[in-house]
Amino acid sequence: MNIQTRIELFLFNRIGHYLEKCINTAERKLYYSNLLSQEFFPETITKADNWKQRLITYQFRKNYNPTKPSPFFRQIIKESVWGGKVGQNWHEEEGKDDPELDKYGRWRNIQLNQCHIFLSKHPEIKQIIEVGCGNGKYLQQIQKTFGNPYAYLGIDLSVEQINWNQTHYPDIQFIAGAAEEMKTTEFKEGNIFITFGTLSCFTETELETWLNQIHALPGFQALCIAEWNESYDPELEMHSQPMSPTLYNHPYKRMVIKAGFEINALEYNDSSDIFPGYTRTILTAHKS
Image 1 (cartoon, helix red, strand yellow):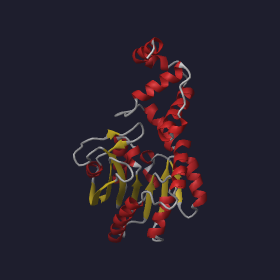
Image 2 (tube, helix red, strand yellow):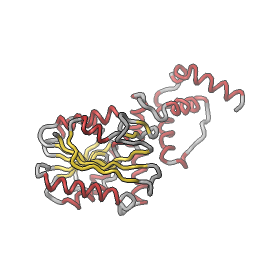
Image 3 (cartoon, helix red, strand yellow):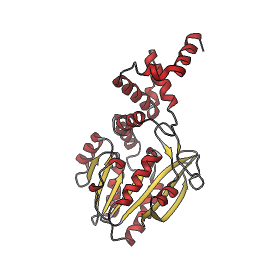
Image 4 (tube, helix red, strand yellow):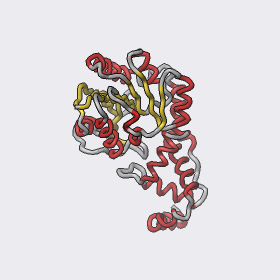
């Protein structure tokens, strides 16, 4: 490391917060977006060309694995990743690589089986809602599996993705927005909320807020979630821990019970055949 780099890092560490104010918000957002894109598409990595970009990169790395990320950082993730082109491109690439939903088929089938058993015992359910529906392929599979007795609704952050889904799946309703920020008047009685790898994108606070909102809805409400954990024991851990700048480990069982739900089925599955070190929690619960 040369002297110039050492001096720069020293300044970033001591007065980086003040220096960052010299960079306009649009420039910060753009470069943050580029850095987040590199997390999903490493081939897009570009070299920081000036001190501003190097400072933003430094601040970004300080926010890497954040326990309580700044609202600015979280908003960039929502806007540029799952609510923007990065997320849409990721879903597009996933769709090309896995057109028949085989990659995660084992875990999807376990989730669908749990959900089928639950639905057969609870005629109160009128609508199946997927939170984080992405390109809509899994929600279409859910619709084909459970058929006409239910209404189907997909929720995703990306407006462009939702518009694409509505064109390709006209018999399914889609709405854009952050699940934990939606007005609860959007939902009536008799819903089951399905997630598949979505809740790991929530911070602990966001997940708590969402679970409490679902529990506060009138009438019968249920959850059917399938979520990743990496190098993390969801039975022993009390709180959430970060996996990356955009993903979190959560103690799903503990948080669901704390929010007032009764668990009907719970399984832990080793996911090492796809992602070494990962375990999937699959659980179904209803409002108690």
